[in-house]
Image (cartoon, rainbow, N blue to C red; front, top):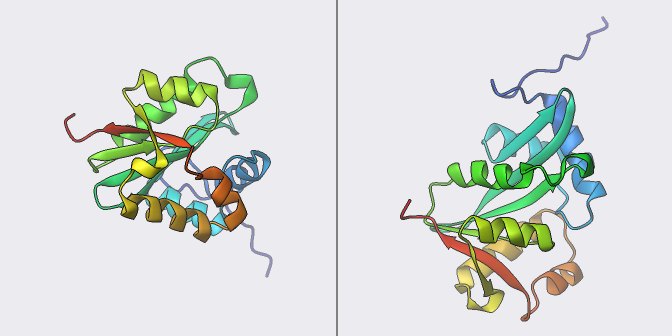
Length: 172
């Protein structure tokens, strides 16, 4: 018996099971983004942790929100395809991701000048990692270790002179 594999929608938002593999590939190609398995991505999509933008079948952008500690969530894995940059898509992704949170504080980890501009524009302010509560730092590191990042990379990412962007989102 030859069963044909179907591409089922995950939600009514147009995201398909096959899109998880496309997201996985983008995460692998963009070296500054934390890699995730297809299973982790599917779970995150089912749990509504991603905002995904498509142009037809092509994934042109996505962002992920992740709970890292009580009252704290992190916006990360923000990706915009090169052909779709400078059109406001990154800002739109971060805004939509912010709307998904139920937590008071949001962290945006900027991995480039455009990320910094987006976070500033949306009311985030820059602080050094070491200024965060220890449970938040621990949560951020735990997420990266569980996603397969090596400790050497973590130390480079979260050294004492690095900073993140934070906003108090509880007063919206």
